[in-house]
Length: 141
Image (cartoon, rainbow, N blue to C red; front, side):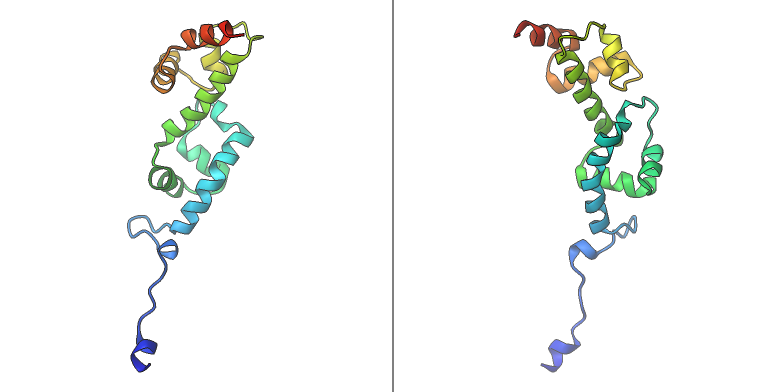
């Protein structure tokens, strides 16, 4: 009994701080849960000039905490994360039979500031160009 009372307390993994960043894992986990909801609700991804610092300020945290959350907790870079929301929005626009704009309009309306980045990202994620996707989506109706 004497030795068990003298043992040093070891904190749980979720309460430990990262030695590199000083960020609590529990805090990072909480931020990860709120991040997607916040971005969707405010549609921050539609801002083509959105930066990691802007998002951190908007969420009331700093860029180190946010970057750590994205990279370590979610396993994704800031731009890939934001572009995933933009691509969902683009797909939604392309699925809309009432939309009569061109691919450049889709890129702009979904938050991309570069049509080439939009096309490249879209093809990488969905395996076809935005134009091909649009033809297939409208052809099946």
